[in-house]
Length: 149
Image (tube, rainbow, N blue to C red; front, side, top):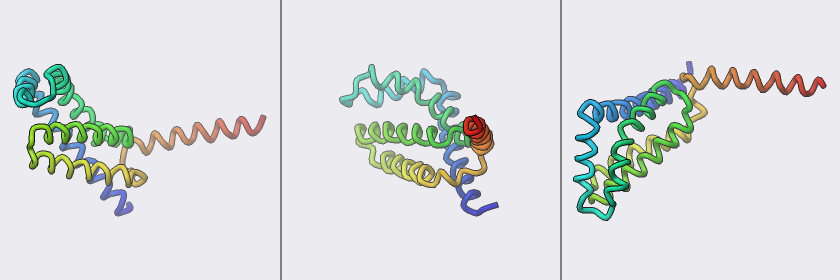
């Protein structure tokens, strides 16, 4: 076991748990209530309801999907990229609402996602690892077959 790979897995799973349970919490409290509350919060802003409402409906499902994929370590880089884009959107919303504590918290989460993306080569303890080995094996056999022709 390598310390960096263990540290990476712990951080990735921690961020995944955060996303997963933020989403699950919203779903358990009721998607309609969450969406209505979000639309109400943005009612006085320049963001129109036709943008806020669909985002609010999709948000819990996106959080659950991102969280699950991060916990499993599956499609790590694309999932972290989506997580970063989601944090960008959430930070934008916090700035629109003039909510500096939430914006600062979101930037902190975005920084952690940045670190995970930066160090993605240390993603050893994940479901991506066996997938990469399997794909590499197929590519190698294909390459050998073509060079033998």
